[in-house]
Length: 100
Image 1 (spheres, rainbow, N blue to C red):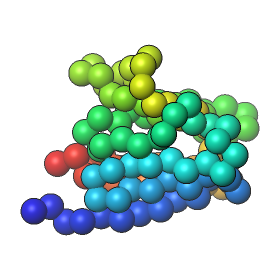
Image 2: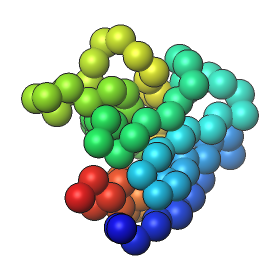
Image 3: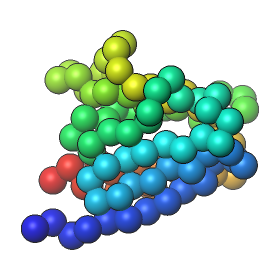
């Protein structure tokens, strides 16, 4: 069995993202960034990151076969402040590593 991973990263003051073994969850105390229950299996998650003046803009959703994000299903959209960018990038590197 694969090593059990657990990792949390905080984005700003309202968002916590959790990798619990092979499940990713996004918790937003304001619920402003998520469209539904924001929970994905590592095999099913896609992340699009785009630099902006205010930080890294992320869109998270269901991964299609071509690695794009499905229109349907749970989504999260958030801006990662510059001071959290390195931790968030490392978090999603761990998510990707958990796929195998």
